Length: 494
Ligand code: UDP
Image (tube, rainbow, N blue to C red; front, side):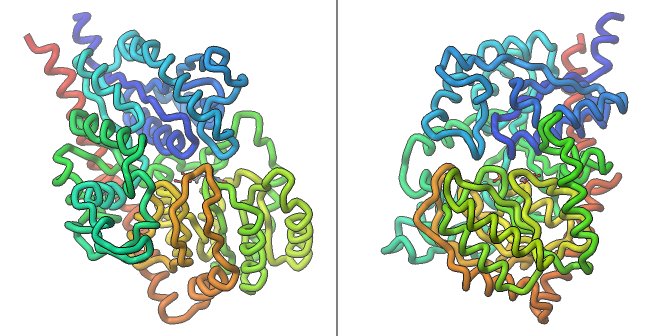
């Protein structure tokens, strides 16, 4: 009897990595499992929990079985100031190894938690390869969360396998990425450094891939219709199960309260004033007339690049919302004057720091993006049916650009040539004329533009269908939960 009781609910533990753009989609996924009746505990540190606790509180009041379990980050043990426990735009570079050290100290405690919380399965970020061994010890499935696209992971795998970048003469010559469903070309300079030549990260990625192969499967914030050829290709070459259950932002954040809460620290954003400011401004603009310019949660540009962007936006003749981050001591006066000028002319609205991106993208006044091709943003803009100017910077952005421009045909490249690390400026400054030209193509209303918009709208429809009963993501979710339940029940068989 007791056994029956124990077996009737599926219990899970979700462990996000300590960076905003890995936390946001994995927490959305955790919330989706809870929406489907799975008991969910999200394990994280205090500071990182503030990014999403608003959403968990909302779900709890809706009666969903979800909660956060806080583990204390050992800041003093690793010599970090209290509160520095995530990899984000403001994390000083020299502190990042200490955050990894803190995570290593936490590991045994988290391992015990999986057991103490009686998890039937765990969903852990790709950056926790050790969790596959813990799961094996406990006899439960580990599902790995990937923060990227199927295309990006397939392309990286191909470069690792075939090293096409070593067969061209210069860093700027292009090569074809072998064995992919489409003919995709890029240059050595556009590859992440760890793929260009081996470094510590290359080793880590090997360990991650190994752990993926030993995991029960992987979860992606993607949906079948968005990159079906790559979805099939990836499963074939890696040889594991994988489920696309996206767009998770659309599925998990159905109400305006969810969308507004997303990514804001609890208590930080009673910033209604600011919110009403941008909303009022956007609502005064004609449909499809405004460009949303944002480079994600991790990026800072040097002053010289901010100047080029500002001029390009002003010269473009289009209205824009620009999410911008100041660099300490640099560009303050220039940007203040710029902001004043564009506010007066009603041409532009600057949001400092963090923007409620989901709410902005769904506003009918938005007509397109200038984006760094962060995967979450790509999926969110597809969901909103918007084309974009692609401006890849770091991580797997250059691969995502290939999907947006070459495969889906919903992007205009700004012409970025050089990959950089997320916490470096790099040497490339894209000139205002290049930016202005790309914006003109995106927002110009020409034939190409209309075709691109048509494709973006069609994808938006597909995204919305994917999460409905009978849709691909919906079916993946239901099937995965059923599978996990059967696995659990099989343990209780005599
Ligand atoms: N985001 C947001 N407001 C911001 C910046 C980012 O809501 O001002 C959200 C965005 O909606 C997305 C995530 O943060 O879900 C950023 O992830 P992405 O993969 O696009 O880029 P990254 O931050 O990894 O560069």
